[in-house]
Image (cartoon, rainbow, N blue to C red; front, top):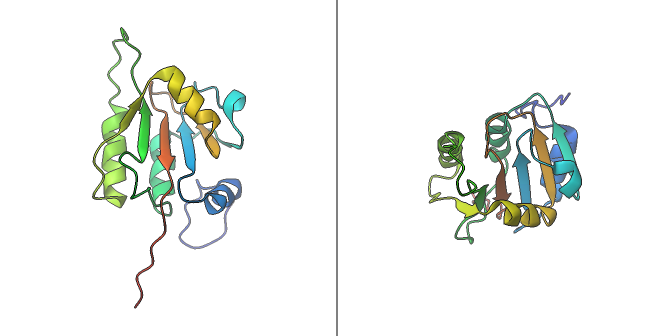
Length: 148
C-alpha cells in the first residue's frame, strides 16, 4: 500500500520505481489477462484484479507520452478474420486525450509484431482485464517543467 498523498493506490511501489527508471523513448506495455507477459517481460509487474483502463488512467497522471514520436501509443491490431470489435479502444482514446490533448491516433501493430516489440519494452504490466485486444504500448516522453 502506498502511503503518499495524491498517488493512486493502483500504482504499486514496483510500478512507480519502473516509471521513474524509464527514460525518453522507453516503452511499457499494459496488458490484458490473456497476454503472455511472463514469457516476454524483461521487467514484469503484476496488477491482478485491475483492468487496463484503471491502470492507464493512473499511469498517465505521471507519465508523459513521447511528443517527438508520430505514434507514442500502440495497440495490437485485430487478427484478420476475427470478428471482435474492440470497444475498449475508444475508452483508451478518451483517457489519453484527457492527459495528452494533442494525441492523434494509435499505431496498429500486427499480433506477432506486437509480441516482438514487447520483448524490447522496459516493462510489462499484466492486469486482470478481460476485454480482447486490450493490450497497449506507451512510449515515454520528456518531462517538461515550465519555469515560473
